[in-house]
Amino acid sequence: MRKHTRSPIRLLTVVLVLAVCGCIENPQPGSPMTNFPVIDPNDPASIARWEASQYNYGNAKIRVVQLNYLHGNLGGPTAKHPTPVALQVYEAMSDGIKPEQETAIDNLIKNEAALHELVRSAIYDYYRETYPIYRAAMGGTGLFGGAGTLEDMLPEIKSGNELNEIVRFDNVYIHPVVDGTVAIGMDFVVPWDEEHGIGLQLVDGQVFTIGSAHEAFPIAGQ
Image (tube, rainbow, N blue to C red; front, side):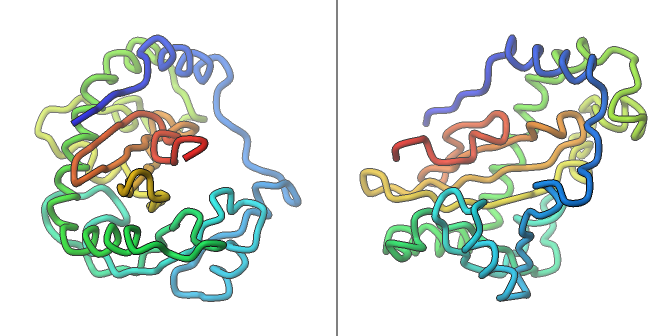
């Protein structure tokens, strides 16, 4: 299994920039961010708008599936309420969903509990690795417009459940077929790095890479 993370030096640079610049302003009415199409898994019209929009960078088709673990807050080992989740199946708008991608989706649903535990463990490990860098960069300053204390946004791991409620699933990407293999990307919203988040890829049921949110996307040219 191959697993890598982003450079601690680059990470520290990102955090220091955030410390200097402070919080990101809310998008103004009429800005590109306020016009971004939002996918509602329960609304076929919203899915169609997103698929046809300029923001569908991966020429992806949305496949809605019911999931019990891989949605909402990171959570613990207990299943959540079944919820429809929109999977972004890359390159499927023009080429259709490939059999290998269908298999990847089936395996995601079938092995969801085990994959959730794998993902959760990887996020905690990654957080433990990067925590000292963020802590040193942030110090005691009040960042992000004073949205909570430093301990709220950047808790020290003691009991192993500190991230359960503050890390949130954002998107799930079913990658194109590469050499017969389909990776699954997931990205997450986190309070200590709202701009970059966390992203990871699963390949053959293992964490292939983890870092900032871009790690969840297919490699350019694949």
